[in-house]
Image 1 (cartoon, rainbow, N blue to C red):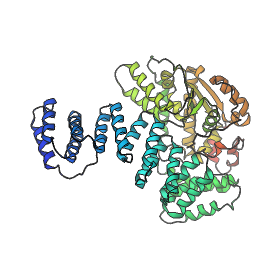
Image 2 (image 1 turned 180 degrees about the horizontal axis):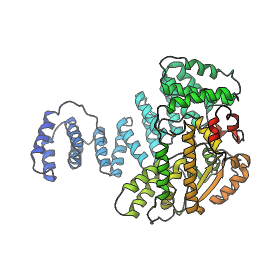
Image 3 (image 1 turned 60 degrees about the vertical axis):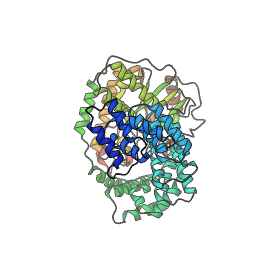
Length: 546
């Protein structure tokens, strides 16, 4: 619940009402009625202040009683509708909360608290299109505070609504905003949608306006917008000059080094690429604490884990597709190719399965009911409210940890296991800068090797248990014989016939490190790529060549 009130001492009327309430032997219905009577005729601020105090106490019954009574005295207050909606959401009454918030927005379209509370509620329900519409309307007719705009962009981006987020950015920029944060966000979002030229303009604006752009990793964003063909490209000078700036954080310095490594790799200067990438990885690796021992234990725990014998009925009208395997093993490329089919919807990398697995493991009560609730929650976030597709892709590679849960929730699920030459896979991971907290093993070759080994051990276990639900696809097959590979995979998925090479998806955004590569013609340049680097990175030889 969100109520904006002053943090000053309780007003006299509110304090007196709460003091009388506290003297009651029990805080039941009679005490709540007496509290409401004490506040009768009070200004709206007193009602809201009392409700806020009750929220902080965790007294849901009294909070609702006060707000219900306040709404009778102040029926036109949008702030009161928002406060009431917050209390109802805490009580899981989402229908009434939504109605109140929409009423508040109908009378006051620019009410930011109502718009954001409704948007977050809709996001939690997997209603992303409805959420996007609420935020679009909030900013449609008036310019809001820049901080609110940034919050809206982040909320939309997290919900997979990058196109709407980019439109908000562009509208504000076209209205005259020179906030470099907004330009940096626009560059990131436009890049995810494949609009690389406009993305470059936004990134360059941010870099020219504030040195903070280096801390926002804008140079790394620039490096991902193309394949460099010459060291004469101006970005080389930009990256080298930025490295000389004083006051850079270690993370920003590492980001610049990753950008340079990528740039030199593009022009086939593997000596320089290896030099910069080694320094970048060393910086990041020194700041994290990833445990190989813990990883190996987690794999053994998954192998020994047994899901409850209960399984649910398969959905009758749709099929979930899980793209699993090591990151940088071709999952993005394959998902993008399949998403060209008109009946396939690609949702990117959802984060729900680990959360649901933890809840199921820790929960008590009826097993089937818990599974049904988990399936409904996941299905809402996979299917959402904006597509009539029948096949839905979740491209979270590490879902290979939860194959047993996937098939307990959705017996008809199709699991595509992407594999790649281990040395190529390890090198590709090591060359990437990931967001903090993600892929923390990827900055050290022995750690990467341990994760590859664990993933393959676990997938061999799942393949033995669920052979009919899993199909392994090699990156090398996708790049050398894409038509054959896609034809066989489509048949296994039971997709209606469609030319996957005759059209491209125009709506899917790509938020992974493959945002540029996945939109280029299929090539084999990355097959056996490790051989270019082995003389400078002998650690690669410690990883099996398979």
